[in-house]
Length: 478
Image (cartoon, rainbow, N blue to C red; front, side):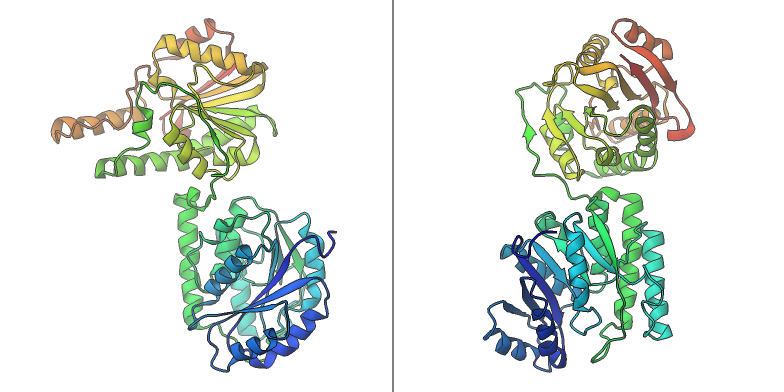
């Protein structure tokens, strides 16, 4: 375990009318002798809690207080305190309540798990009778909240409690500014975002006595708002899951001097018109609900965990965020705009590379697999041969390529053709929703003719209902 002075440590405690608890709590925390500073965030408590804190802080160098003008919500108090912790260089943060329902005796156990975890959560559900002193009504609501976050969000942790440890040196500050909750729903929303971005969470079993002093501050409107926020999270997770991704903007795009003759940079910087919005809405539906699970199936089938992969012509990356969380992936695209969007849609990514996929800046025989979705149809046959030869060059022996290639009479092709006709012929808009598709797939023979001219052999070819007949899945092996 790390020594107590290895990390700058802070305990964050929001307060509202906690005058009778503060001195005793500060005394107990001081007895820990673990090198913590203390930060209290007080919402102008009518019982003058803030004045007590200022008086104590004048005699204790490790005690600080933030005074806010009015009661602004427990979630916003945590956000303000967390921002203060980052600003002042703290690397380890513990958050807890001020009413002794969160006992300081568990802090030592939190620290033991903090070396290998990014978040440590005090859990009320890991041992029986941890809520034995609570009344039936409060127990029922608490267990109901846990059941709902566990079932609807797929998050197995105690997500509604405030007793936590955060490794701020491992978690970017922006993770705490993606939340919209200023109240109690902050706790499950913030943990869900961290969970979705694959930060390591560990639970520590705790007993939670009834509130020792004062009365509970959670009102009916807080519970109702939390329910509404939970419904919102469920909806977003289902229909727009990338909204939770904390993109890897710290990963630099390796830029190269390449000519974008097909206009992909303009495509990924398209204007926000009604026609573009409708196209994006429908395209996002297909990507999230049809293409993404289909891609996951084929990648996991053909590549063992840990295989290094290239996403050739990666575009916005709305379909492979599951894959980048499981495999080291190099994202390659000719468009800088596309690569910037790709970074924002992925919390885990190996390399982001601006290249023409006909000539990639990657070592020969260095890659286990390549996948490419909706790209090949934009190239003429002679360029497709160049692309496949380049794939062969960078692949290891027996390496595989997975291609998603729309067929000439696929549903998406027919729909987009109709949409272009409607916009351009009927409404006279002169709109092109994407660069021209000059090599839509016509048959299996077409793929075999390409493989015969390269070092690949066709090992799988599938077209079916899984994606509503929009893409042919092709697997080639070197």
